[in-house]
Length: 559
Ligand code: CAO
Image (cartoon, rainbow, N blue to C red):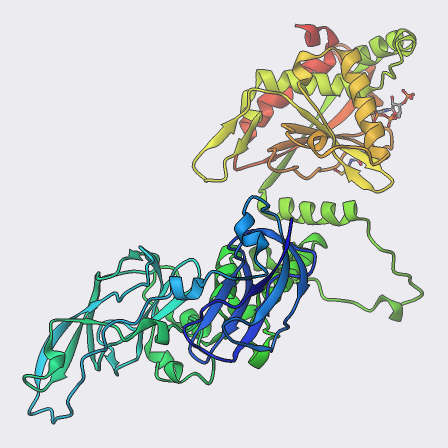
């Protein structure tokens, strides 16, 4: 480990360049090539990467400072002790990434002689990707003009982006854009013809050459969002620059074009799927920084956790209006536990996403309950409490095996169903912190005692907040039992990506007709809610019949 001072690399001769973003803090561990800060001239933004891995010991600059080549940026404790030559050096320049990534100046564009239209001749010139400064391939991220547009020399035509820089490629001279041969997302190489421009030129002028590269790209490398004051940008008639993209309409394009953000922020926004027009910029001249995007995402996540986002955004359903309850009487605000907030968000998500159907039935558990009562003492000797729950878990697991159409999930591609060949049962569990659903694995392969033992352990862990994440994952079907609490029936919400859940209410002695007379039987009310995208009513009918038969004749559980 050794300390070194990282300095500003060769930035193409630019002096007193403003620091507009600092992307690291003291104590951060950084990788080689990780962006340290962003510099901005009036024409370009440059990300300065870290020359080698290490830990930031001190920041020697702040946002707004002006720096030139050689200015000290930060002190780094190098992580790479093998790199003795660099470690021993007192100062080390960041790789001149911007210079390496941005195109080197190409040959100056042909000069256009002024002349009247009558004197001029029309010629079609190829638009050629200029020198990319060593980058082999870059991506087309914006199309700033479309065929038929009249352009002046230097009007932006396309924006290219490499790992470290975005380049605004301007029209080499004025004319009418005849065709564009690329689309957003295409990779292009230096020398590639990407379009054709119809120009008016005086005969014999140098500009009548058939191939024309763009103006020196490094000088024209501007952030792909124009600064409101940048001359290169004001030359781009935004309204006349509709995007040619399948996914973005011209109105959206216009908005995004007007957003003031640097390439790194735009890249982050694209990675996170953030619409930059919705982000408030807090940087200089309301520039959107990476932190603004992160704050925006954090706020959205927070909203989602509180369940608000799911309600306000799901299928365009309007939010429930905020009410000042204090106007009706005394109130107090109680903080929701994390589990309650997550449950609220999940319930809203599942309620809005899953088309629910609930079917009801009753199982005659008279014999099961008699058997359970007869086994209770023996079970207790083995340290097991025999409630109806282990029998319900075993019966559900057997029913899922016998009716595999219930043991599925919808694949996220919308094209497939996932048929599961394992049977893990979720147990909805009321805990002091809220509802938790531990998962009992391979219930189809286990006996009643083992299921009872494992279920008790999982329930205890849930109530003590000791469940591990993997103990709450992988469920195929959930049992939500309110039997101990009472009630005659309820409609549980499917615990997606599972496709079905069973709600169990309190068993009651009810008169049942046996063909000759009414007899008292212990009837257990059951409700099964299912995702109608995955399961049909007939599937549920079969599943329910199987389940009720298993519960009504406990001997079937061992078959
Ligand atoms: N009918 C009648 N009695 C029942 C019964 C039923 N359906 N289910 C349980 N009981 C009885 C038990 O037999 C036990 O009585 P004994 O001690 O005399 O045997 C008593 O009720 C208490 O049972 P329990 O609650 O300790 O255990 P359990 O195995 O039945 O349930 C659990 C465990 C975790 C499912 C339950 O405690 C729980 O938390 N349920 C809440 C589920 C929930 O909140 N769901 C969300 C609803 S919205 O989807």
